Length: 483
Image (tube, rainbow, N blue to C red; front, side, top):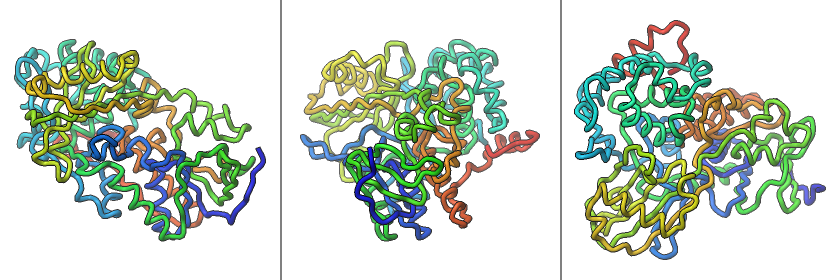
């Protein structure tokens, strides 16, 4: 395909209008760079996008996402865009677990990290002192964990790692299988021990860490606001037009859209998922190191279900089922207790079917039926309420699966191709694949672009040292890196 319709050269073109791409574009615009953002979809936000549901008129997301109090890069962007106050925080209770016969409520107690959640788990149904004591080696390694350990732990699964530490099978089944699914979106027998331990260390190492939820649609937090920032700096946002390929051979010199339009650029930032980046690379680079790993990134699919009931079913604001082989849904969110202006409405629930291969053969009606039944195990009134409407969102990729070897595949922002910089939650951020990881990747990419333009800027915020006892232990590790 020959490039057509060449226009005046853009300073930087960002491919992908999701979290990473928009974070990068805003950071560059704030430094006076004219940015063109190209997004294939008709709406911005990528895997954290929102739209108005046509039947109810409510703004819903592609799937519910959570924030937490250590999301420093995400919160910095929302502060810049003027929407940080649109997070509904839950500082008193971290999460309710639907254990049987009684639920387990995770709360922070007035104890130093990493012990503050411990009393909440003591007395959990089915666990005894032997199970709790078996966690001691894992707790010790969590406090000592740092990036210098990632390469070694990336070679084994979380299941093999915890068994090697002597964690009991009952505790593995009760906690670690659940934790692996909800925080990494991958079963314990497949997850990289490095990926899981990084999250464990961060969640347990900070005293009082708590979760939050968007009071509005996720996209309403940043998409229009980021667009205005880009446009005020002389840039533009193009929606509904995908990229066919990156233009150039020895150096990337712009992009060619699917309709043949050529957009020359001094620099290009790819904020695409790895498989999509592989599809647009110049032929001479496709399959060559380091890009040869791109097809190996495995997507973790999920299904989100939205349920509109005719009454208040007295659900928890945020609750989750524990792991079981037959389970479909894990997280449940009562949006009536989260969204701005929804108080007093009949209950609206969003749920997540994580790593959703087990639901692929089910019809939407079957998924809704089973979701209501699983919700009723947590909120019994759901079984007696009338369901007014339901939406089922089947999402091909929530995140790339952090399976064994995943951390070693992640690429740095600086690519070996001149003129091309990489962003995305799958790149080398020293973070899990989360909204925070995506935002941080966008800032890292912006730093790289600015450095190549002769401007040094510190945009990405690194994780801070662990709190309390966890921080003291971490400080004793020889050759330690950032937590």
